[in-house]
Length: 150
Image 1: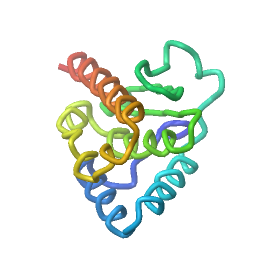
Image 2 (image 1 turned 180 degrees about the horizontal axis):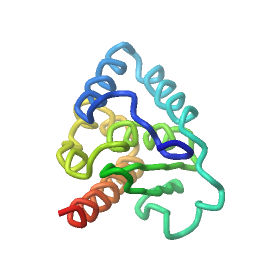
Image 3 (image 1 turned 90 degrees about the vertical axis):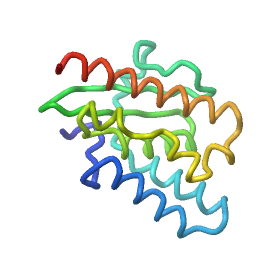
């Protein structure tokens, strides 16, 4: 699926998590890691302005974050955006892992991978809460899609 929806480059969510870990290990300095996260955000497909409305907004984020799901060919496709550069990058990371996967595969992803990247510990509490809210929303979408497929 193209357009604003993220098409993953890795074959599986586990491969995407492993790739993120490898890419983060390349940087010794947290400022360099933040720059990488921001670059990932800049590379996200454009999220339509008309979609930036309350029903797509993720509550619990300090910044504004929007997400749009679609189910096609048995897969969960996600588009997302934020009004803050670092958060846009965090959205990009999560969509790289979750978008284009089956709902079941999305539910099997352990969101603890963000802690393994030592990312959550280096974010403000509000940003960490926002990332957790976005993961909860993605998992709720995947849960509903899996139930409908059953």
